Amino acid sequence: MENFAVIDLGSSSARMTITAIQDDGTYQVVRREKAMVRLSENMNGDRLLQPPAMERTLATLNDFQTIYQELPNVKLKAVATAAVRMAKNKKDFLKQVSRVAPDLNLEVIPGTQEAHYDFLGVINTLPVANCLIMDTGGASCELILVQNSKAQHLISLPIGSVNLTERFFGQSTDVIKAADLFRAYTFMNQLFNGVWWLHKAQNLPIVALGGSNRTLAKIQRKQSNFLNFEDIHGYHMPVPAADDIYADIVSKDYAARKKIPGLAKERADIIAAGLTPLVAMTRYLDSDRVTFSQNGLREGVLFEHLSQLQEQGKVD
Image (cartoon, rainbow, N blue to C red; front, side, top):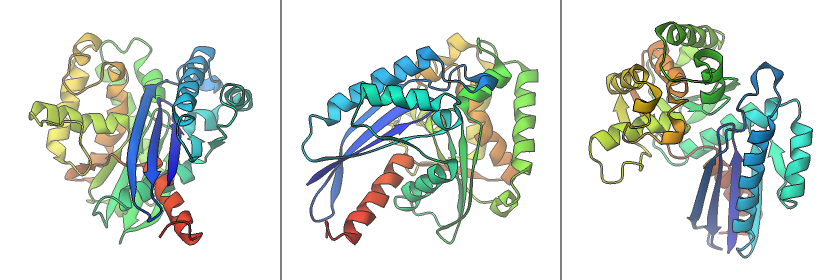
């Protein structure tokens, strides 16, 4: 039996999933950890990771290390995405990570690899053959065009809930101004126009990943009194319902957004910007529904690892 730990250091959150893999190839998630580290906070145009954000992240990685070191036969894969990828001071940050967690070899992966892992996480757990996968994180957005269950095109765009908030809505994010929302929406359309293959996804459903996108499903499920409102994997939402929730979010000030059932308080300042790419994409593609996936990068890494173990004959 192997304990396979996957750490995903994103721009907004750091997450760890530990999966117990049996010798017969069966597996079960035994632990999930998450912390909102906001690593990309205040990077702005300088593209420098800021000391407070790095300190929060290093403390979280140290906590993760304490957890997985207590388990027997641990195999670890740790990846960092957009915030570290873009940072001019990433070498300094990685040195600090090595000091705090010496056995955590943090791999900075390109956006296309992040998109590939998203694809593996979705295609192995949801019955989708033709769709657009959209993973909106804190500082990047991965798009994958799936046709006949194959990833035909993929790209990573440098937009996410944290950097879009800082660019269009400012630091306070108290009241969302119509002019700022319009500029953000226009920027989205211009960005999507630059992805030449995106028209091939016209009218296809969108499979949405990422903390902000998943929050949309949690809010609706909470409104509908689902017992386990956070169990959103495979959940379908018509676009008009998504529009209504988005309109309600952007009409509220910061204090009111924090009180929305299903919306984590720590996301209240970035949720409007975090959902804008998805809402803009539904219009851009004229999609009629959104399907939500709980599985993405970390699960993609797991499926890649399981495939490697099978090839090596280590599991049945």
